[in-house]
Image (cartoon, rainbow over all chains, first blue to last red; front, side, top):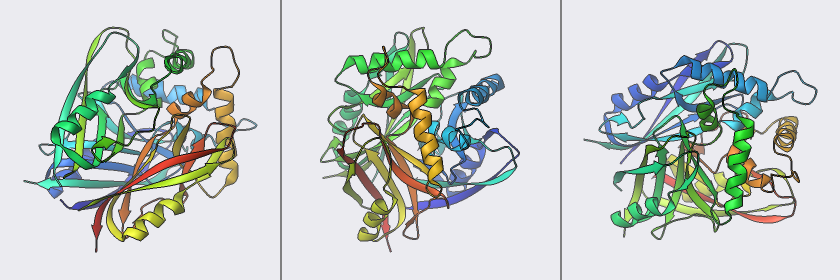
Length: 133
Length: 133
Length: 133
């Protein structure tokens, strides 16, 4: 049961959620893995990972608004708001692969959560452990 | 070292923490896996996963109270409080299996954290990677 | 592809972040694993795990300050602040191993986040799945 490492580059244009579900699935398809797990890992400390509602965009706007209020920028003592928002969400998630597909719920999507205003190129590693059939 | 996929159905009766430790362990027992990992993955966007104190129920009540205050429902801008509470907790956890048992600390239990008031049937996938001895 | 279990003991001297990156990497080196994943799992309910900025100590102080304000101790209803801080951060993380090294970003370190004031001995399990080359 081999291990396969891939890396996504995600170009962000400021704060917010960027869906990467299809990019992760493409890597599973390319390797033909039918049965196993995929670990998604964000290699940064000022953006994070989130599995989140992907159908209703107002759910994502609410989330972004909530984090802006909970961790305001430019206050006296929080010069590192991006790191705090990262700490409150995720760095890695491990998702089952069943019959060649990530076993996500109906409304789940995989998102990079950017906490910086400026555009960035973000690296997300994708590690697939599993069996080809 | 094969991969085994199972799925739990958890019936919730409103907001709060529901322990699933024994249900996860039963699946490990049934497959006779002695050495490996188990990944628990919640397939929803309005409930989440948490490894939490399982001995003292007041710790769980405190947690539920904290989230109700941090993310109040029915405010002007948060119509998606469930999704925010989910984002602040977990979707997946990977737990070591040593000598056939999840290597949890003395006070750790695995919980589904329901964020909806109405009863729901929730799906939790359980993926076991490891060796039978 | 065997599974290897190790356990770290981390001695904490009060609240705050304690870096364990080198301790995790030493276990990977000792087993000579070149290609796989490592799962780090904290076996407690009053401390937690975090992958965090490791270069700038002010980022960590900001984070500690933020949590002290968000979850104050000694209030009427929060007698379990440690458990709430744990719930808001992480219990497990799975990190890719590529060419023998954890594939962390340039500024990422692995930290135990202690939420108790008194000194403690904390157990962190390290599970390595992968191939020796």
